[in-house]
Image (cartoon, rainbow, N blue to C red; front, side):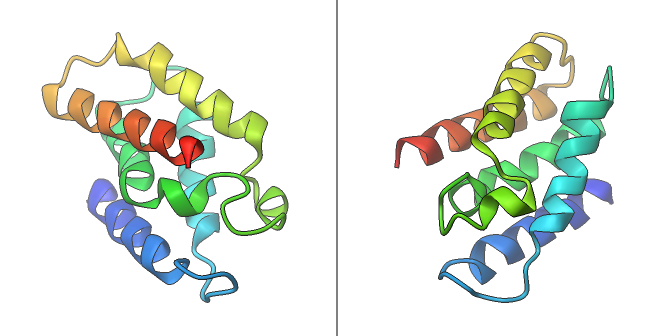
Length: 118
């Protein structure tokens, strides 16, 4: 259920934030999940990693720093933090035993990487 809630909210965020100043701002829900899983938890579970991955897969282009405005800094999407999250997902990749979670994390890393290239 945690994965589904995060996936739904991520899709909502990616479509709601397609244009500058679109509302509502769903990014706080993203930050809560990413912070808990990638910054606080030492050994995140497969469910936690999947919940994190479903944020990046659809929403990386609108969540990345500088994607819409300088306001991203205020909401927590800093360039340093983005790099930290990418690095943490890379570090955890070798520890994932579940094939589905591994695939989702790889998709998330690819989405993040593609987003910063744009």
